[in-house]
Amino acid sequence: MEYRIQAIGRIHSCYREKFGIPRQPGLVKSAKGAVELLPLCDREEMFRELDTFSHIWLQFLFHEAVADGWRPTVRPPWLGGQKRVGLYASRSPHRPNFLGLSVVRYHGLRKEKGKLFLDISELDLLDGTPVFDIKPYVPYSDSIREASSGFVQFSEKKIVVRFTPEAEASCLQYLQQTGRELKPLIQEILGQDPRPASQRGRKREYGMLLWDRNVRWLAEESSFTVLSVRECG
Ligand code: SAH
Image (tube, rainbow, N blue to C red; front, side, top):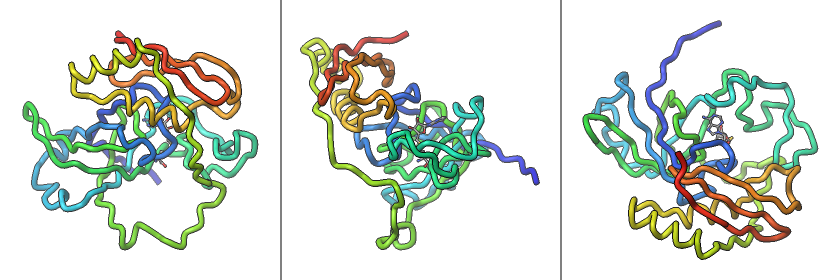
């Protein structure tokens, strides 16, 4: 069976590459973005009353996973990257149809230069992600108190994140220039430990792109140090 569907929107996100994006929405509160509505669905009336909801579901395409294909079993990071589980017992982006599902905080509709945007935060989505559907999150049926969460166990353990004076000054300057709060964003992302399970415990330097900045940081045993935050091309 084959059906044709069309993207209704496109994500604008602080996340410019896959590395650094949290494993689920809601984990990094400072992550900000928007859904730009494409001509098929850029009519304000389609969103009437949506602002009475605090959160929305987004259904989207893991467009940057398509080229890598998929396998029937995967090694979820929750299990230290060791054990394999069935693809459908995971939230892996690499799946037939490459469809993703995220609940994000909704901040309202914005019109800019003739385009419509839905402002969102707490997202786990790459910049440019195609969006296929939007629905309100309704706690009375979407939140299940007695649900079991399988092998996914949330850990409160956070990593200590420090900034060099140079990195700290760059964040402050960026805030003054753009109004974007880079420092808490970096702190929250690194606090989740974005490294693949296989690289944990090793001293190594990493880089990640956030907005139009290249963030370099050093991972040591139990702490991370943000070395620099510089403009990227
Ligand atoms: N909440 C979603 C996503 C879980 S996987 C779901 O359960 O379906 C989260 C990972 O998806 C992130 O760590 C990020 O690396 C990856 N990701 C986000 N947007 C993507 C995109 N457009 N293409 C490929 N991978 C993406």
